[in-house]
Length: 310
Image (cartoon, rainbow, N blue to C red):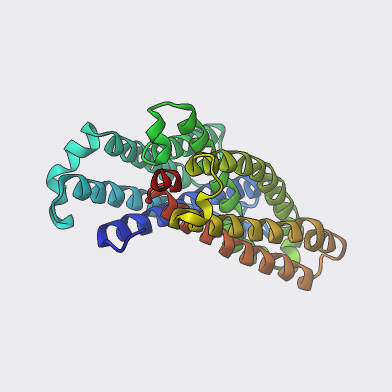
């Protein structure tokens, strides 16, 4: 860790990009679930929720695109050694002639495609769903190519695992964070059934994503530690990893609380109080996930503990 302004800016942008990627992906999933129930219809009680999901997706997609472009600009400044304001002169050379620049360019292209997919209205067509899946894969692949996984070489097993980790984390964090923004629009008596079914969809998707997050996360952590748990206490990188693991555990706990306690009560009662309990628990889980993305950004822009120890 360091206090260099350029490092701080790159880390902050990485965290914002991760949050935006997750929100865009989560909003698209929510959009799809609500669209399957014709929530986009003018007379639908859930139309307000569907419109909010679409709005969150567009804003997050635009934010992701801007963050990726700004990250590429900062990468140019870091590689060329010029002030940030003058980095534009080397932008093309870095974007096309360096591994990191190509990775950021790929992520930027994926974010543009994701924004275009999020900008559409009405029900999600098969082509839009395929475009969204392709865009998410491109973004994740581009980001994995500029992280520590790239040290193992282009198209390596480590990069593939990191790509899957980024996708799974974005899916989990996305449905939680976007859900915390969208679900209050479904918190009415006439839309209560939509709320219950949507939360059930979110819970199943998050559970599936978490399995991949844990498996790929363990692989990445062990690789970063160089197989030595002692690095956890001997390096600042290890300390941040511990913070990330604690935040993940807390998010899992709140997610489990919703899945096994709050949601079953809501299904039985369909009451306003239980609906707000589900939403409030999800808001806390969303804060934990936001912290996870910040910790992940710090780790990705810091020297792994194994390298420092070795």
